[in-house]
Length: 444
View 1 (cartoon, rainbow, N blue to C red):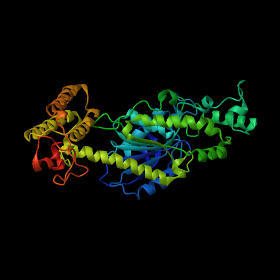
View 2: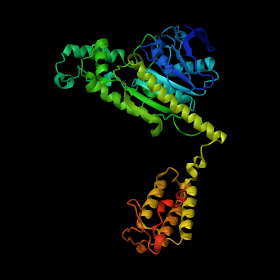
View 3: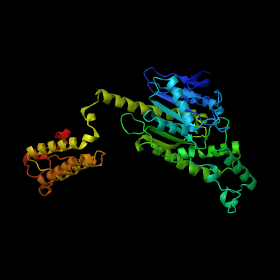
View 4: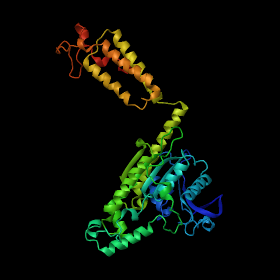
């Protein structure tokens, strides 16, 4: 496996693998491991993604953090300021990631998608927050809820108020519950040491809220990155917990799952509502989603990359002045000004024909333009145009009074179809049968 030397740590090469994409792509996908699986766990999902229809294909980087997989121990471990067993903090890890990306992919370090599992979620969030506008997409795969632990959500069997029958799944032996409680609250405590040397003690303080801080993913606006949040399947996760930690079946459903689902919902709040997908459940997956269902991961990554690249193409076309039509160039901030003149031109057109508008046309017309009042452009800065629009609507209704409307029954001469509006009074002869759909609706 290839290695790369970071300028700040010349004696500790990092093991990595770079999957080449198309030369035309400026996007880099970086896979962030959890504590359990090294970078090899992403290989199947990446192979499947490379067979997808995404074009151009982005470049994909996997790597092992210091202390895991094929990478050596973290040189920080020997620093006097470090406690034994706590080699690197969350910020240390994001520093290394930033240096790695800039060293390996200097031409693709300004547009990144982060795919992460478990504790990799904290790395992704912290990196996106510290380096705004760089991360354009994040795929969360069963993120580790770093703002709580098992001691906070499981009842303590040593507590005097503990009631096994009410607080544990039916039929759970007390010794089995006590053993599981002891193991889960010890191994997964934030201060617990791990083989990698990842110091998790401050994660709860750095990221106390799953939906804060909000992330900025666009270089041209305040919009956040595209985000997809994926959770495990409860049944599969419960079996996994029993096999690995001897957690009684049913404990996840009672305590762990509600907490985890709430956390995943919070992750969707890291970005704009229209840029968040999920939480969705990974079929037949426990905690290690990339291992259990690489096809699903490849599909979700394909969907995420397509969104990111589509937006990039749109922003590039706007920047170059190339647009599909003139209406595409009308910005939201100009919407009231634009719609006002459309309304005025329509009024002049019908006024020149000396026609009184009928009730059905009024309903259609008002319904069409009332939608504009719900647009984001309705801000204080454009209050004057909003008032002008409303005044124009009132004037239109006043000049074409509804009291003059008549609805004569259709005859063979008029040949009114069921979808035709009631005919206007004041117009006699064959002109009374003029079909309203023949009028130039582009003015409307």
